[in-house]
Structures are given as structure tokens and as C-alpha cells.
Length: 183
Image 1: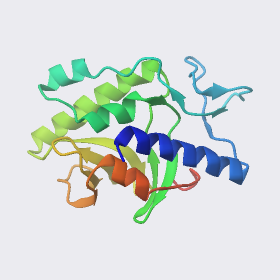
Image 2: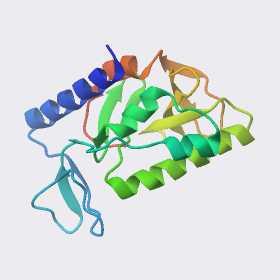
Image 3: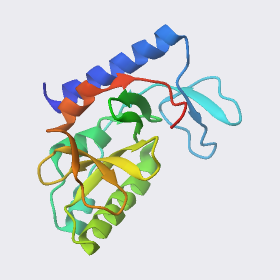
């Protein structure tokens, strides 16, 4: 299964899981910049949402030029297909939250964070990764090794060691939708 199909499939499985649990997908509300994902009505603090396809895919060319590298296609598709508030999942290793840009302005922050992360990896003389999820262990993120597309559990500031999947599609197939509680 290719990555885009696996990503769509995981999103559909997540939406179905939330329907079955009779729980809405909720996230903190950004009062200054609403997201195309928001569903009315919103409270002052929270808003219900659902993933929405981006009208035009997130462009990583400036990031690639600044870093003088090509980002792995799966990374570009992961962040460039949907807007969302992040989807929780359980993995055999624990709970995680898949990161998603909330709106167009959030994409700029995401790009800056990716640049900062890769520059840190270079300073530490470690292989270049791009984070895709946070975990229930604040010292561990889930990352894609840019060179190969393999997915790793990465201890912050450390070289990747624990491979979780050969690619992002395989990793998404290992996940089960879950609530955000505990992440």
C-alpha cells in the first residue's frame, strides 16, 4: 500500500473510531486564526474538528533549498495532504499523537521546526530525521529517517536506533485509533 492510501485509511479508521466511541475530535481553539477543519459551534477554549484535505499541497521547496536537501516524499505527503488537530493512536510501543498542520499559518511554524530539527541533527553529526508524532514519553518522538523513509522511535538529541517500520505506510498500518488522553 502506498503512503497516501495508508494515510487516508488511517484517517477514515480514526473518524469511525470516534463515531463509535460517540466522542468528538476536540482540540484547543486558535481564536486568531480559525482552521478549515473547525466544526461549529466552538467554545472559548475548544473546537470540534475533522481532517480536511489541503486546497494546495504544502510547498517544502524553501525548506529543501535552505537545507540543501530533498525531503523524503512520504514526509512531504504526510504534512501536505491534510489540515488537522493531530490524531491519537496506540502502537505496540505506546500511545502517540500524529502531528498535522492546523491551518496555512501553522505550516510556516512547522517548516521552521523541521529546519531547526535537521540543523540540530547535523550539529550532533546524526542522521537527518523529520518528526511526525509525539509520544506519551516526552523524551521520545516518532521520526522518519529522511534518507530512507524508515520510521524510528527517536530519543530527543540522540541518534535513531529503534526502527518501527520500513516506511510510513507500514507504520500507519501498525496503528490503532485512540483517544488523546495521556498524550
